[in-house]
Image (tube, rainbow, N blue to C red; front, side, top):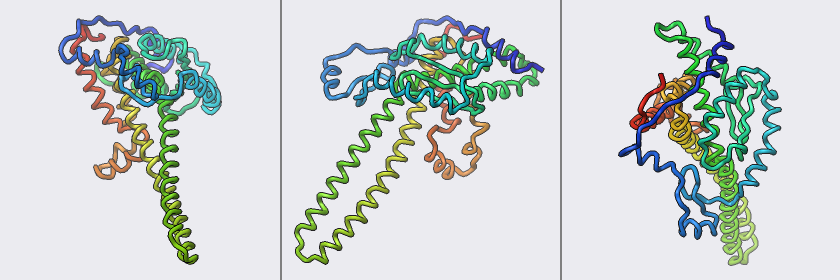
Length: 340
């Protein structure tokens, strides 16, 4: 039986190279949608009110945190997160594989320069990877171990060889790392901070207006007992305002988080994996691995599954698999050859 060390060593030496045809039709539109656009006069005017075009997604968005501050936030969190996840991993083959995959993907970043990217492998057994603002990324070795276990279970299948397993590990890891690179390149961490600040400002304004209205009503009464009753009503109103605002912010940020995850998947597949020449079908097995471990996926009731999904930060793996295959079909139309 092939051991984990030999699988990792083999996966490190695989180079994902391919050639491409000239894009045409809908495939051309797919590629064009991800290309940087020339700054227009409208873009310059909107930038004066902190509305800019995202260099990765090409969407206009409110943005007021400069990149230097974004990088500083990531740096502050980076070492704390490394310590939290057991320190830097020293396993040579794992580190070599991560470094090799990162080298394949980083040349295709749109916003962050390669020198801003710092991907660190940590000792945690958690099946997790985390992107911090500014390009700092933490990969837990547990996710690589899980990949090895996932493909080793296939080695008993007829026609599935150790070479297939090595290629699959590399493609799955490329999707995992590329997804985190997409978070950093798009600026999802910075966006989360900006949205939280804006929400807090909006909630504060709503509270100020509602309090002003209550005080206005109170000023129209001269009987003290009525005033006291209204004062008590204001306390109740403030309590419900705080509660509803907290609940609304919780679910809003969860929904934004799920949207960001799908956006990172799309950018990873359509930009990084596409341009680096990775096999999408093998890469999507990462989500198959997540699906096996997802308790929500095994719920039979559709309503219950939707309710559980609303409480999660990530979309269902089955949703990500379906969308990933859609992206692959779009892009395969411009591939001259597939990986062997």
